[in-house]
Image (cartoon, rainbow, N blue to C red; front, side, top):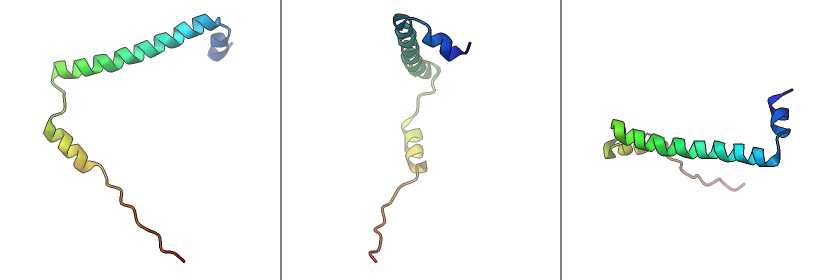
Length: 67
């Protein structure tokens, strides 16, 4: 039996709880990574942000010639 079939055989309430748990885990990971970044001193400085903006390619629109 595949994992997908096993998941589909669970009750709707159980699937909802599993989905909510996965989303809560993701939110916690985003929150914890920001806190860890500040704790370990890996927060980007203004100089880093400026260098990143310079590295991003710029997009220019060019008008097409009409035939």
